[in-house]
Length: 471
Ligand SMILES: Nc1ncnc2c1ncn2[C@@H]1O[C@H](COP(=O)(O)OP(=O)(O)OP(=O)(O)O)[C@@H](O)[C@H]1O
Image 1: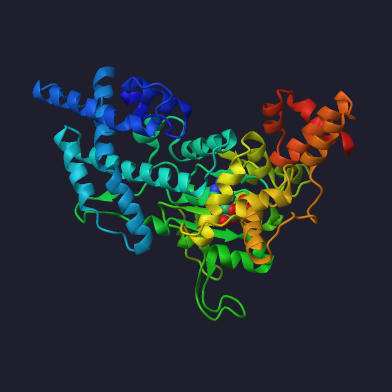
Image 2 (image 1 turned 90 degrees about the horizontal axis):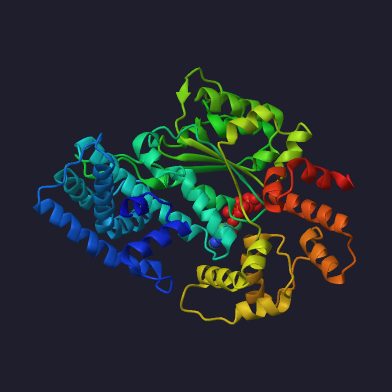
């Protein structure tokens, strides 16, 4: 069970359940409280195995040997977990110079003492650090208790470690560069935060001689908002340029692809806004993994992962020929759809209080207890659709601070969800209209037929017919 716990997604209900089963706790006990008794119990088992001379770790061992090896990894990982967490905080403050981590060397020694080979132990230390970073950035960057937010966090975890971390630790840890990600969802739903969590959680090797990780994760995430640049400048922003490459190129310029570390990720935001010529150039670099700065013949290699995002409906962009299919297929190893705020609130009404309190703390620190959240709820009313999502909520809090009130964004496009719920309440929709409207609203939110089909239990073609019924 410990081996199973070690390899399961920490944001999944399954993991919580296994932890409870191991220590025999029922579901009234908070799962974090189960960890300490679990580690105590495990420590006792490992010590008694050691005394009996029973720990033999080898890669080709049978299932039992593997389970013991994984349990030891789980045990050692938890003994050093807090120190990895402190290293993350220290590294954030220190910036791009990798901090020394002598404790990680001790962790490596513990693993080799238990019988892990040196190279494997080095890899595990790097994975331990990566696991803590992923946990840290996903849980801190994307808060929320609604089921759709829980699912999102679990999805982000799988995006980093695949859905079976034993595959990742066994063979994929250094082969993730072609695992691209497409983030979909409305504006302000946290696509940037999700991309940063993925980018900062890549595998960074441990260097035992220097007693530090080879690179600071602060260098591991670079982003570019593609809608900010005119087409004539994008190439130079992406690939860089040589001094004198064109009129106005008075200095050499490093592009975003050369700034991205081999252990990191590049975030191409607003990918749905770029024209076909830029899509072709990006497709080329993603395929060949090499590029040349403008005005230069040097061939530079790009090794990081690619994350792209758009708040535009990707299916209709593809249908209209504005987004190339070959480019789409290069980007879609994983597609993650961010839930809109109204869905979160609909699933779990206290999500609004929780998120607003979180944002309020981010704006003015922990000390200040302002009655803003209650005022916000009173002013916008229960069925407000939050078209600008979390970004709008953040600004709504600031607006209340400045003016004392926030009544919502009336200029935003009339929201389907609200209109639908009003029509349902009024009882004046036929079943056919209801299904059509519901499909259209979901499609507007999620941007692809597959997701609507999954949510409604309808066939893909039926969904498409319903969505297009108004066109
Ligand atoms: N679940 C969340 N928990 C905490 N903060 C969040 C969450 N979702 C979004 N935010 C915050 O909301 C703001 C907007 O998020 P972000 O910029 O990532 O949105 P986006 O989806 O990339 O928007 P756009 O499509 O307009 O670029 C950021 O400050 C982000 O930290």
